[in-house]
Length: 95
Length: 133
View 1 (cartoon, rainbow over the protein chains, first blue to last red):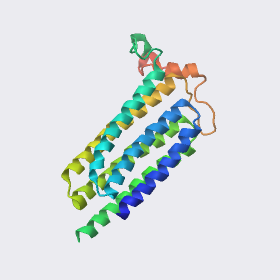
View 2 (tube, each protein chain N blue to C red):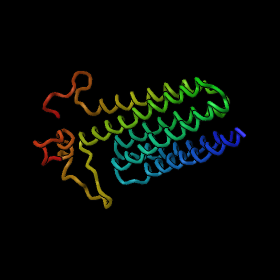
View 3 (cartoon, chains in turn brown, yellow):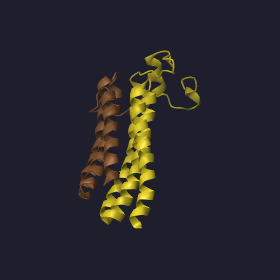
View 4 (cartoon, rainbow over the protein chains, first blue to last red):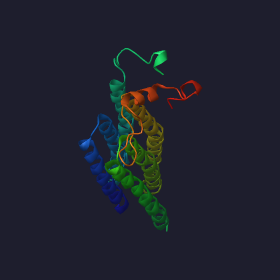
């Protein structure tokens, strides 16, 4: 029990610091990085919470969160990378 | 006896994981520019997930006796180890492509302009673009 509580508190402290970076910025990419990192920590948080409450079924939620976190980051970055994200991939001379 | 052995294995691993976790978060707050922060965030994403995931797998098997929970945790760890470096790579590439210039420890830019950063991101690292890289 104590083990899960210690992990949980450490994750919460780390999340707080990550949140500070998300609020401070300064650039868009710092915020995206902080949100992505926050998502990874949330997966750990959900898993540790499930173990603390004696219900490992919480891991399903953590698994879904891990996948959505990656998809969301790539989607945001693709939106800001390409001039028209709906239509194009790189053309040959973009590389 | 089993409890004692489990504690002897779990606690040091958990402490190592927490050190990865908190040092990555401190780096995220303290380091000077985006690319260095990216580096410290990767420490948390891979190191802490791997070690703490292993601790939780051990707990799931021994304390809860749940093989399914261990499989799910293993899937979470594998997914995170695959996706976190990919996300970091995409983030660094996009930042360079949109003209974020890396700086050194004194805040001096390492490239002359954001156009140079875009050119660097678009160049293939081969013989023809050696002067860009």
